[in-house]
Image 1: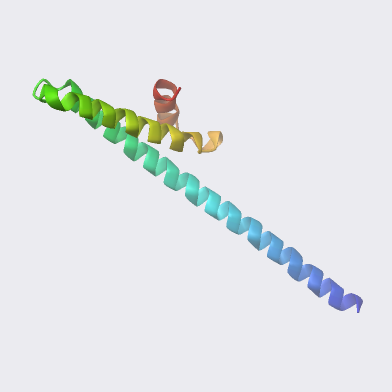
Image 2 (image 1 turned 180 degrees about the horizontal axis):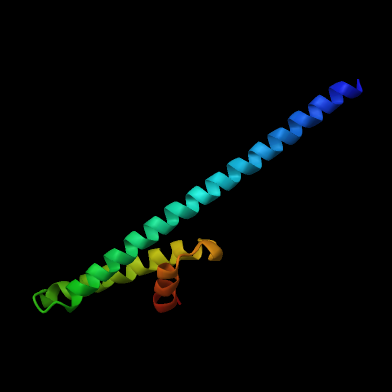
Length: 101
């Protein structure tokens, strides 16, 4: 009887450990994906800023580009806010400091 209980306990503990490892792996994977997505958005935001400031950009398009830039910045800040601070790379910390209020 005692031996059966020990095997059941061991299986339960193993299951709990595996579950925690799965949560950690998913969390790390999510953080990595968030970092990649935030960096991609930051690059796009910079590209839109170049277009906005380019004299060749028609004045009629500047307003739409600014709106696009604001929307992308909001999305990037939302993503950055979900990244665990100790995993936040310096480039995204700098982006957040200058753009996320």
